[in-house]
Image 1 (tube, rainbow, N blue to C red):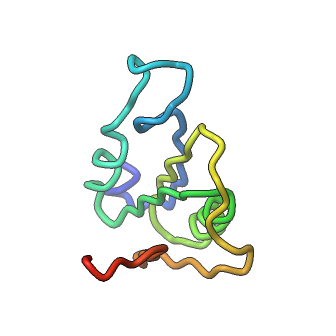
Image 2: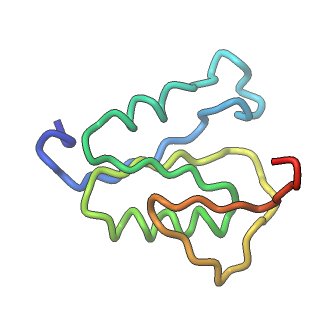
Amino acid sequence: MAGVGKIPLKICGSHAGSSIGRDGPSQMGLEDISLFSVIPDSVVLYPSDAVSMENAVTLAANTDSLVYIRSTREALEVLYDSDEIFEVGKAKVLIENEDD
């Protein structure tokens, strides 16, 4: 209803995906991204490290639509410098291979 009503709701889900830690496979939620991505005008963010998570929260707060942030439970290596710029709808390429 938030999508239909264009309510700028912000939601953060955790313990999803395939690396959820000691909770085991019975807790492995995989459908969260697909459920939120079909909501009209919604934004789904899946940060890959602490820097991108901090930016995801800022982007969500400044986006006038429903935003779902999928957080990761595992401790992850920091991939981005603290001054990295993130934008909704833009991807980042970390490594390019000449065979790609």
